[in-house]
Length: 220
Image 1 (cartoon, rainbow, N blue to C red):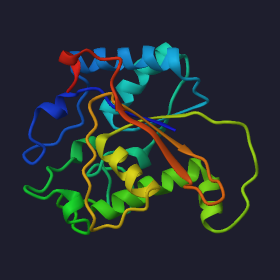
Image 2: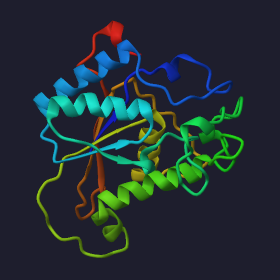
Image 3: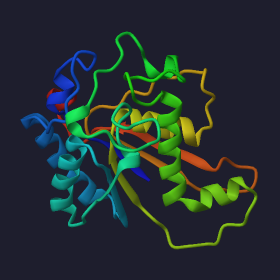
C-alpha cells in the first residue's frame, strides 16, 4: 500500500483554528501532484486507487489519475480528521468548523478536535475500518483465521497527513497515550506492506515521506 499526502492547498496556508475551508491546491500543490504522478507512473504498478473525498485530495488524485491512467475511488473514510462527524459521516464543505485552539488530537485522543466533530480515536477507528475493508486478510489473520493466497496487490491511497499518521498507529498497534509524531511533506510517499509470516511482523514499513520527485524548494 502506497500512501500519498495531497499537494499543498490554500487550506495549508491559513490557520485552521480560525477558519477551515474545503479549498483546492495552490499552483505549487498542482506541480507537486504532477511530479508525484510521473514518479508513481514510472516506478509503481498500481492495481487499485483510492482517495479522500476532500477537495485537496480529490484534485491531487485527479492530477495523478491523468498520468497513470487510472481513476480513483473516493472514500469518505479517508477524509482528514475534523471533516467528519463522530459517526464517520462527512461534514458538508459549507459546514466545516475551526479546529479547537491548542488541542493537538493525539495528545488528547478522546476529546473532539472541533466543536461538533470527532476525536482522534474516532478518526483512527474509521481509518482502521478502511484498511480492514481493502485488506480483509489483515482482519482475518488477527482473528486467527486463515487468509487465502491471492495475486499481489499494489494499492495507491491519496489522503492527508493525519490519515497517514493514523495508518501508522493502526498497523503498528500503538496505544492511545503513547504519542509519536509522523511528519509527511505534501505529496510525500509512504510504502507499507501487509506480509504476515510465522514469528515475523504482519506489517512492514519500506519507506516514509519519500520526496525524490520534488526539488528542495518544492518541499512543503
